[in-house]
Image (tube, rainbow, N blue to C red; front, side, top):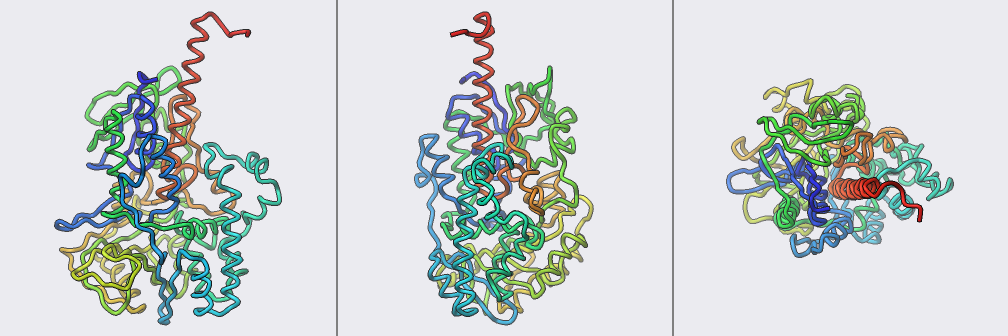
Length: 509
């Protein structure tokens, strides 16, 4: 199989996972990436000589990467240094209340009891048990299945277990059955934003995120980008060619299958198969050529997931004991999501996430100015609305004003700050409007509306956060492995068919 050529479009985690899997199996792999370095959405901002994670900041589902590295004869721990966090995140509200969630479920239950009373603590225990069950029901027949279907899920899980994953109830409504305190509904409702959705419209199935986090959250020494760097180095070691600053103009089709790609500089690369890890909307809108556009389903503007407004900065802080991960909640959660999804504008009172990258989960404060990544959810309108400097300034006032109302004072300067808007995300990830998670997970059918890794065009495969099993670092890695496995199986099947034809027909033995 070593003579078979594969092109992977995109060097994000999905593309790199596919590339190392294929290269380790002896295929001739070329990865083409329009930016100057690997990582995709796992990007870094450079301020002076300091680097700030400015995309995903949380490493979970370690088993996905242990399996990926093991499959290619490597060990994850030999390439990145992981540190487990005892405190998953610190949460704060404008009334001055605070709550930490711990990796230890019993500690979290005790903390919730102190925070909101014994009934809510018991609600958390029940919620955690249900979240674990949902994850276990979905893990094999859905999350790890390259082409899931409702029929396959029913066959595997059964009708009773399928109902137990709460697909027909919104996450927000379900949380009301576990927690009487609205702050706890906010806290756990935030898990919907992990896939770019509103807790008022996403299914309660997303409770499973709580189990994913409780099973372990790690930080990566040197930043999340180290994972992308490690995978790209391993791909190169196994013979893959990685080409950066390279734009794809067209995916070539001939005789009903993919035959190669054309680059923006006029170069052509012939290939037996192509894995596209760009957002599926880019493919559907013809940004990678007209011949392949009809093999992807477009994401309507109103079905797009969240975008973001972010600030990567070097800053001094005071007044609030930041941990590595801290969340500051707005007063009116429903109004926040109505602003974003219904009115397509930044909320007046945004919830704000801060990743303090020179801290861990202890009380110690960095000795000098610290690296911060500050994020507020935003509407995915980057292809329709350009954020003028005055509007960005107004958004900053709202975001940093929210932090101050929760007790955190943050001081920085424009020279020490990089701002990224939905317009910037649309430029980096064309066709998305700045949506960072593909299609939103609104409604019980949304998860089945994400395409699988195979398309109806032979030789064309999909991977990445906009396809099954969904957004997030481990899910993207899973999709890359699934695409690689499907491609290998299909090439093997094609090769077997050719050998049979050359022998004169089908064997009768």
